[in-house]
Image (cartoon, rainbow, N blue to C red; front, top):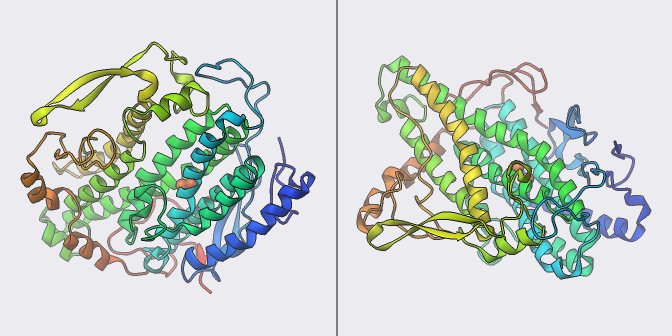
Length: 475
Ligand SMILES: [Fe+2]
Ligand SMILES: [Fe+2]
């Protein structure tokens, strides 16, 4: 078990002190990161004391301590999970061979692209969420937002370390560029679409942490299988932190629903207008936000048929999430039955090479994982005695990437003529007036223990503290 060294300017467990050149390069990047944090990180709260967890070991049990920290003083560091002794490549053409401690020359640009694409999402989400603190529904939620934000900052550090340590000058340039692209920037946006979408209300934030951070989980799981061992170890530790982000989304949405159900009971109505008037978010609106963030996040897995996916699998660069759970780790001769669009909105099944369908395999695993929370939320509604059910839209719905991109399929996955799709859009996705309504509820609540009227309190606080603990002491 490698201890994390916090006496260093950059906390780490990679023995940074032994490589002076690398250490100096990262120390030059550090102030640029801090400048970025102050300019594009959480607005207005850099002087507040936030009850944050900080990693103290990379052991899955008891790996963090909690305490009041001002966010700019958070100890962003470089933490890799421990080496697995004699780790072997678990899939593809080189299955069974020793994993790589260095980047093989022929895979250099592919690996760099993967690391940059992952790295780009981390600061992007911090930028997307930067104004949310001003409208927090409670101090408990404010603290969770900031916990997610500082850890996404650390994930950026994790990717920047790999770029600096293993990709020479190109890597250093990419590390600079990660601070230059900005979410939603017209000239220099973030690489992936979802990370340019505004997250300006807390319902979107909870949907984002449930659906989009879960995409992160699946990407990290794929990269944790990589034959490039430093990448694998980096991603394995990031997954430990990621679990909390999805918890925030999962419980956040459940609390919004709980509050809505209370209001429905109090008023004795399911009428959306009446529920909204009472200051809660009606269930159909929650469904529309879910439809938007799910369909956007599903795009992040990329095209259903992808020669890149086939190559990175063959080469051992990127595996499937939880590769060990599959029976065939070679897949050279396997096929995948892929649904594709045919004429007149019909759907046909095409047999494609399994290796080129790896994006779709990962996406299917992701969708299954998404389903769990949705079923649980619907149970809350069922228990309260209402017939309404939340559900995931069909993955053909509202796609921008892959074979269904631009297709006009309804949330059940049925083809509808384009005119009908456009006319129905506002029934399926948040309309401008839905967004305006949700935004109208967003007012900062910063008294310890108090909750905004549109969300129920959590069942318990953080780290066994009470819900009414002062999780953020405002400056
Ligand atoms: Fe992350
Ligand atoms: Fe995350």
